[in-house]
Length: 416
Image 1 (tube, helix red, strand yellow):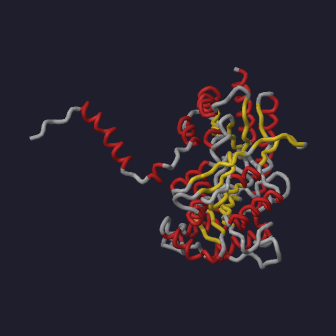
Image 2: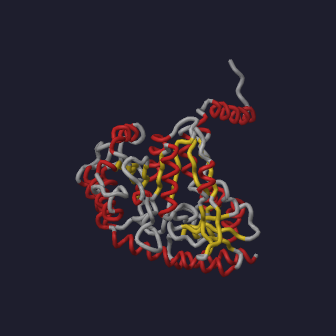
Image 3: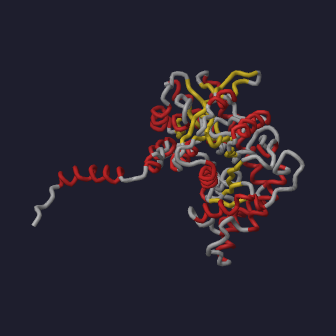
């Protein structure tokens, strides 16, 4: 009979067993980075009176007309497996929506958007994951302008690919500070292993919004080296001048290798619904359907019915939210500028302010202190890759009164 194991021995054995489990995992799984945003979020979660500006969502719940569409679907018994590529009605709705806002899929004369270009996914992140799987794998490289949404690096890591940072710079211009993508630096980063370029515009976290000529330059580089472009244009309509941001649709031709990730999360307050779409050449249809089958097996029909309602009837809701974001953006920019300690480019698009504070070099440590000392939740710039360490990301897609109070607290914290 074996002697009983002591409590002390059991405690010592647990870390060893944990290390053995980890050692048995695939390196792609181990390479998935922890989220620096989630770290601060979890640290401050549930604190009384905290103003949470750390994650990329607003404070308004999904409007009732969208929820009602999902409820009707449930009541009708739409609880079974559905089309892997998405409900035909939703794909047709997306095609009409894109035609309304983008005109045509290609720069030259072309027919309207075809539903065959669109594949319904479990959120924008799922669309990005599929795009990465299509374009790159183990040992490949993908260029990522930074600072960047950390999920790009995560999606690449679990696919076995390597993100190659192309740091952007904040430069003074006649219009004030602006983020700038150095195309010379981008071209120098291309190697024989490069398979794609990720382009997020309007961008998360910095609000960088590519001009049409910048998209032309990126497309020319991709054509020259036979690269895919993974275009995250999720914030394309969240702009504060004009009706939408420049898009690769404005400059690309039918032969260009461009994959678009889109989501309903931001425009229609549907972050928790996890529904979006991937836009790709129809010739890839069966391959994409296979990848959906072997990852999620499709998006629930009630969520797709809700998406149809959002896209079809959500124009007024989106417009009202955009005006609210504009007001909150102006409040936070004016308030931080008044402190004399903040450095930032006023974002022309998306709903984030990416700002640095004089005297702060490690935004991770500072973000944890700000939770404790100012009761405001910010995302640390360290989460967004090379060049982000001195910055913070603040999401201003919230009630302007709440944003104003957050700025007041931050200004007080800076004076301490």
